Length: 97
Image 1 (tube, rainbow, N blue to C red):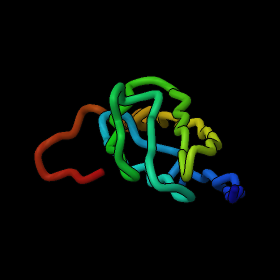
Image 2: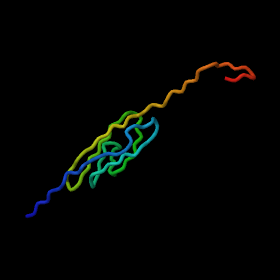
Image 3: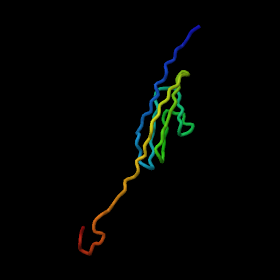
Image 4: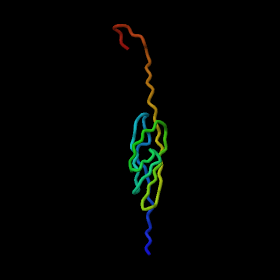
């Protein structure tokens, strides 16, 4: 009889953790042979593209040789800046601001 001892995979997620509203980003998982993402549902590749509209947590389960490990990240949505214009709203012909 032979016993094979598998190493537990070291799951990790790489990618920007801050995202502008309306943008998308790639999250890349490392550390294993197969990948299962919590979101997007059914994500089974090392790289997933996400476009959250609110702050969102992502978790990946990495499997290698029957052993599993998980990693999680939180992606924060940065709201767009608010532009404000101030000053004289009336200008006469020939004047400048």
